[in-house]
Length: 429
Image 1 (spheres, rainbow, N blue to C red):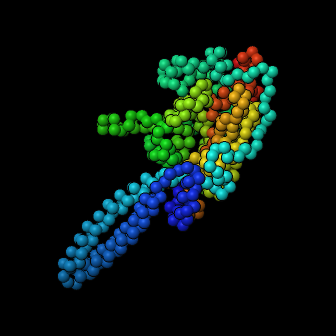
Image 2: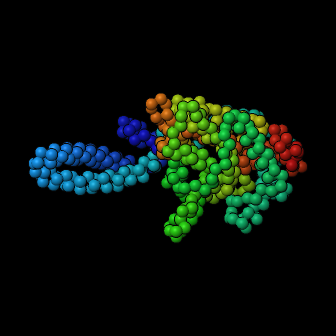
């Protein structure tokens, strides 16, 4: 959530940034509500002050035996006005809050301002592309031939865009998990296992509600559940582990000594992938349920730029050690999701389609999520909003797909990256 005081100082700045992120905000209505709230607050404060003055007069007159009929009458009238103003203020603030929650985080000054994802800047391509003495195959073709994927049974259980991962491929995924978790905990990330079903408030703090509800899965909405059964219902499946890792600290105060606070978590993630039904319909690239290892950091505001580079470096270290060629991408404003002030992506090489595809991203969300969640840090006598950051250490199924395509052999086998062999005890799948 943006700082509304800063918005009032430079409204055009925020409006232009929202436009550059392709976010549609009802600015006219927002400004009208904000002005009405400020006017109502002034009147409310004046009436409170006047009521206090009259109360003091009544107290003084009663002590001296003077008549207080007129003052009591005025206090009653003011009380009615104050109650009406408070109801009006609450209504106006609720309406303003709904619009406020749709306003995106302004990009940092070094973000590229362009109007298409084609304007994302490739900073560097790391590793030369692999060469094959045969025509490389798509990962799903190899995995289905070896019976490592079973989409038919997954569809029987659920629907399209689900997969069952089997045999050695499942073991390779757990090798990736063990290797990455050990790497990150050695870098002082705290491993957490937290709920994957969360209340709507957690998604609101991290921006996914109300802005992207069409891509979320909801469990037992309150409107469909009897009142006596609602306490543990009306929950949402997480889009990403970031939701729980950030929102767990809602309404909390960090001390200086606690920061930076870094978490890592392995979890399943759930996305409806609305409007993408024609994209990546086979294999492990775009599914409704998938696994990720996610990093989240809380830092002081002046540390967030350096922390962002640290998360990016960790992501690159992982893919370098896996031996997968990738592009490092500086994301432009058009492709910068609403909470992020700056974002990097890594795109892994997929030989069969001769393209790079996104496998990780890391975002500096500054105080956008912490302001929504009221997450602060104590600095001496002062309190300020912490900055939060997130980064995908490994998108597991996309990474498995990249490994299969880059490490495939002419005989339809899959070589295991060196760093994973100690966890899986074989060099060939």
